[in-house]
Length: 212
Image (cartoon, one colour):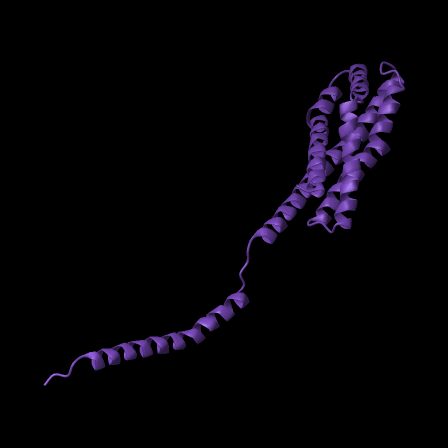
């Protein structure tokens, strides 16, 4: 297994994990917080934002971006099969996850945490937060899904190329000279066999004693 395939598997795995997190927020977590009283929903989101900044999450969140960028550069440098799928997967993750997160979601998290959720200002901030944070998170979930597909297609392209290279091939052009050679040798073989039978028959006739 070469370095390109290892990095592709790492990028695919990290992107899939992050996509699962964003999907869970889009389909369950944010809908549940939105139905809670304003102060409670905002306070719960602040707690989630603080707790999610742990070493494991940050390793996958940021590490996947770094691995994807390195993968895109190596794919072009080595002219790897499926390089355009690798570039597409890396671009989807970097733009759809990292840029959206640092441009929209993280600043909204910081703004929400800076306001008391039990005040009127906190209520206004929470409503504004939900209106902007949820669509941006949906974008992250969708781009992660598309990036996983792109990395998977890159792996398929690499596997197909490897199988084609290793499989023995025999083209009609290679087989044609042998066929012609057989056609040229057949008349000679027939002539040799006929001569041999004629000599054997003649020798047998001469060796036999004449009958009166």
